[in-house]
Picture 1 (tube, one colour):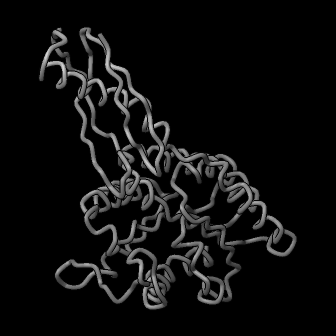
Picture 2: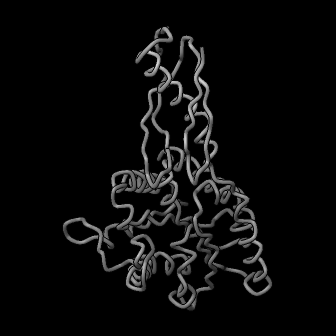
Picture 3: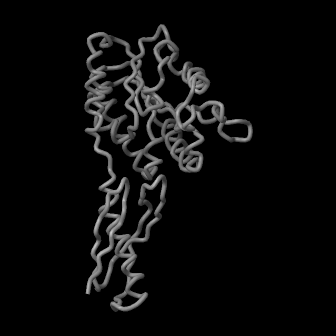
Length: 280
């Protein structure tokens, strides 16, 4: 006997999952539903005893089998393809004849960097280049590191990633591992280049993830204390009030992206790090 269950994943995407009467080896999972995304983390193996195909017993094991298939199918189904940024990167590369020069200060990362329209003006007279690509994650930056960072041979790099990673349910350890790979590649090809990680910012729309955001910030901050080529920039504290709650006045209507007041804080906090790089 077998049963087929249709599972709606996202945007109408569906999977037909077939269950069969047999002993199952499944995984215990934390399932987190955010904006209709299914995220699977922190799993460990366990055994489920044999069962018979009758009544509620069968239904309960069917549910477990669905969870197993979700682990191996849905997470892969929703994984973002790094090639989705190809057109955006090609458009930025058209500026290369103008921006390719010595002693560049390069900013890259997700939309908080891409939308920083006053970036070059904010840090004059430094030679600042913006290579932010909205919606990106740490793994996307790692994949496109040659085109977005290494070929420009910058004097210093400022990275903002991790925000979207955590919103998609990625494990903190995975994000840090990808960040380490990025730094390793930069050290290998650009020895002496300082790498700055801008803390994942607090925001209204993702305030429910603050514990995980602070965990990631803590891990990268700890790493920066023992690696002389890595710096951590704490913009989190500056964006919160005395009670540790995010300042609502720093965001546009979506509660995620910053307005001019938010970027003014970033300018004030990041500025001293950039000045230090220019003096070295």
